[in-house]
Length: 394
Image (cartoon, rainbow, N blue to C red):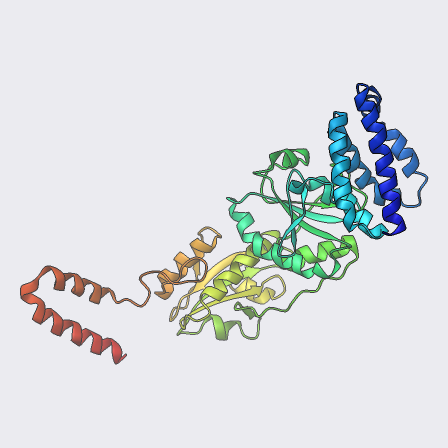
């Protein structure tokens, strides 16, 4: 047995004897100790240390834990449990892990990918001021939160190499309303920055930038000084400029949906992840193109097509000279419905296909007629065969 283990056994045994004797005599001394736990005494000692802020969170946990022990019997139980755990203690690091392990299991820290998942129970343990943190307060039913989710996951990946220096976290503030209310969350998603040294509502900053990966990563980099590692991703959205705009947008064989945007525009930044999804959804549709152009930079194009605000979205239909302004909702479902109509496509939200994809309406009608009219089946069969040959020859 190591010296450290022997020392722990000796101290715990001595405390067990003292507490046991006091319990035999009514437990008055132990009760007095519990009732007079004084945080000021702890913090007086902490202030004499070189880095009290690193130890303070653990003292808070210990104090909270001790306050829950209301009788000598419970203290004895905890000492017995400590004896059982001592078999794994061989170094000072093991002691630290043992102390950390006294936190309730419900306060354990878990990750969704590289994003820390917060709850009412573990919020103070995780956001303790030792590291800066960006926290998303979201609700599972919130459409904007769903749009942000893949971007926020990428943000977690971008800073995963420096988890010990900056935290990317999220809290379901619809489920954990106490914490959401504490930090003044009134809508979803709400993003807040917790600077290093801040572990309470005072000093927390609201994030008001764009919800695209570059905007979020730039914000965290500016605040923390940590350089993100963003993996390059091929975009299915065609980037237009003054040199290629007319060639692409006015192609007589393609329907081209164009977003006229500005790099500084907040609404454009919020639209960016949805626009990427639309681009991917129609990347294999031959007569359909999703594109964008920085009309603030390429002002000649903006002037030519009467662009007066951002984002402005217009469809350039195949074979037509005048674009059609898009005036629907800026949601994935609305864009897909619009493009399916003009491109005669069958795309579904999420990038899949609708049940009608690959089916021919005329043949569907003939199939129904074939079932309902047995007497005419031979004639209908011939008509179907002729239609199939006609489609195959196109």
